[in-house]
Length: 99
Image 1 (tube, rainbow, N blue to C red):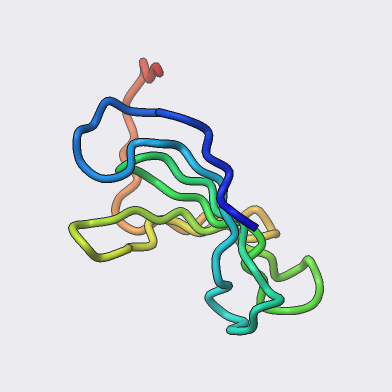
Image 2 (cartoon, rainbow, N blue to C red; image 1 turned 90 degrees about the vertical axis):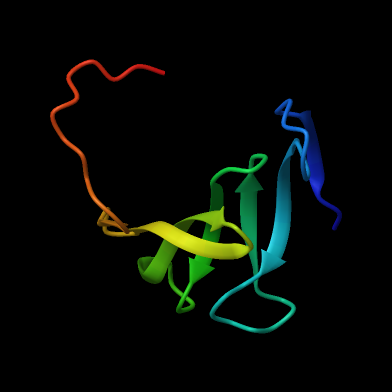
């Protein structure tokens, strides 16, 4: 199945500047039938869904990854129990976060 191209999502002048949804090889099960759904934005964070370590949903995880240079890094993991694991620091004290 080809990637779903969501169109231009950035005016960045390097690399791919489109948002995409794609199927990618599963990082645990290295078989063609087991794929992850990856949601990506240009030069930013990717979310990898359906990375499961068993045949049940209890072990499902969502991985948040980004690129640091040419290296792909995991910056967070959310498991099916609601536990969120963060690489780096949790910064508190910001009272007026906005988007």
